[in-house]
Length: 443
Image (cartoon, rainbow, N blue to C red; front, side, top):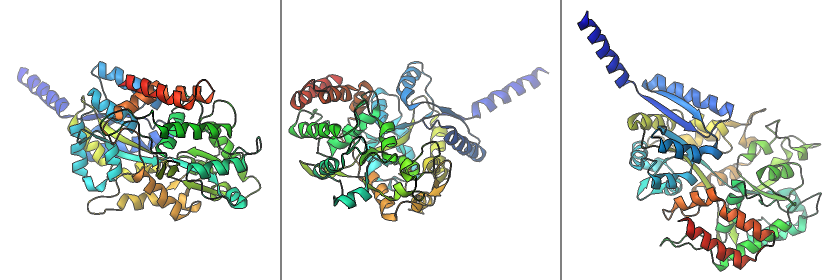
């Protein structure tokens, strides 16, 4: 009897020891997206025997929750997160960069876009495995531009000329600038338009480089845009509402607006389409992915990349197997959660180099109604969107100092000081000097 009990206990211990599981934290917390992730997790478990617990986490709370979990020694195995956290977490010892690099190698380094891998790099390794991304857009009313004889708003000068020409408040605002420092959206727009003028947060030697004539020039440009915008604290919500209501000539937004602009979400109406055919505003919208500043004719775009981080508390083998599954068998389904804002960063497999680009292009988008992006946007526009992701830039990541960006976004110091400048509390040169000092203190 004792021998039988001992054998049973031994078998139970062996079973428990051999059972593998993955705890996966994701910022894709919307119910429809959670359902897709649960389906991918179930398919992975059926194929591998490794169970996956999918845990939704609000992006606004992600940093705080990861810090607490790290302190408690209770990190999840895999974290889906935006790149602004990646290098900071690698520096803090939260991410296992060797495990992420090995995963990329297993999948094939050449199957990923070089630009996205560069943004995720840290000390010669890949800090997190790129999953998807998007490039920030300047949207403009192409019909109004054509009627007024205005050129494409792809540099500081042409943007200001168009905004002045079309500004007719309250019927039409020339621009909708971001002015609410409590929202990450303001920091994203500031970084985007400053990059356009060649402004970098730090140089290759690691020195903060904000107190420069180029940044002062950017601030002056941005203040004029604010003067051609509605009053108040503005962020992504007002930008979308005003543009889709036919009251804004230009806005800055992510590609997540593409399905909303096409009228495929009933909860996000497009009043400008009233009296017109479905998708009228989408078809009368132009897109710019790269903007040139007065002092930087080469121009720049702004890219957001998101990835899978493997933590130092992870079951590495199980975590790697899960990520490799998502980025292969489950990848088109993953991208289909939000086709308009999840561009493929892994283009294909070694055997089929364009497999995922082709699969993504065939996906439908929308919520209340479904349709492929090609039903509203020409192939050239879609190609530009994907190309913009590969060439888009971000502050400090390519210099291996992305942790400073994490601090910059977290403290909101730039957004708050720029807002004070916009409110007339200090001049552009003084603001640049003060920002230089405050950012150096963050290091």
